Length: 399
Image (cartoon, rainbow, N blue to C red; front, side, top):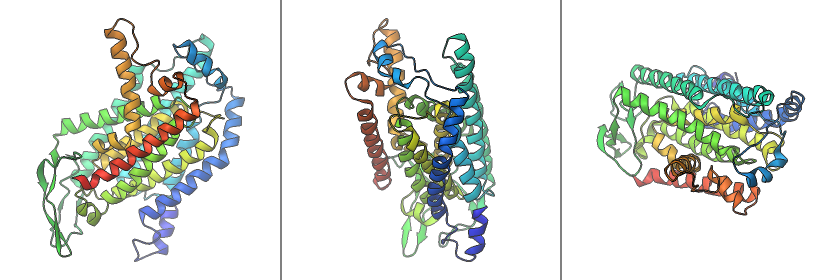
């Protein structure tokens, strides 16, 4: 493991080469190179296995617009998952509980998405349909994963006793692992004031969550984010580009939350060990950038559920650990818009007896049918995603 090499190389210098932010930056470069180098061979293998997508929508005009995508190989998400896994194994601190659980989340959702894609593209092809796993079948595994993650995160938080780096602070259990941080709203004080140098910071505000509520929120976040990214994955480069921006923002946030002094200055909860998740976020950024090399218009490969489900799930997991799940809805605002557009379309369709609120949902198809080219829609959604991420980071100082 390169992490152990860096740790040995910089003994006594914890903020040098072995720092999480430096290794996260290396993970971006390594993740890109892994996907970029393995991409051509993976695409050829998928073509040889005849794992080609057949986009079908309940809108004739959209089917005509996307007919050129027929037989483009999918399940390319296996390449992203492999690159992320490899980067974390090499550059992450595997003694960190949060890193190990992140890998568990990655493997679980990659297998779930892979099974869904395989059924959709093989059994579905033989039967003449495009159905994979049913929605309730996927939800069962997503809910089970969320519940497992919630229980283990709570147990890890309860067991983590640490000597605070804050001046004049006593050794104590972390009071924040089950607290809810609310953007723009302080709430009741739940943590002590701390002294750093000559200044005092705090008290820390938020809402303490009962165990059932924490589990429920974790399940909802994991299920929502994984499915929201899946819904966004409908145009060449759209989901992978938006994930890059979201993961990059969380790479910064995990570094802050995992640093006692920085988190205190910004009134964010200090979660010991969460800084290692910056390496996971960096690996996601690099792998998705490498995938964009082949997924940009015209796409040579699609990620499919094999990539979209684990990418969304891991981002949700990182938000849960860092207690920034509400911040996630700002950082990943583009995914919220996409998912809500589908829910609104379904609700409007059922309540009006068959009328449509959008030309087609998710909303990126609405703009495509409105006359914008696919590249115009994707580029503008990237810009909106960047604005969401920038706004979310700016809100840190608005508390």
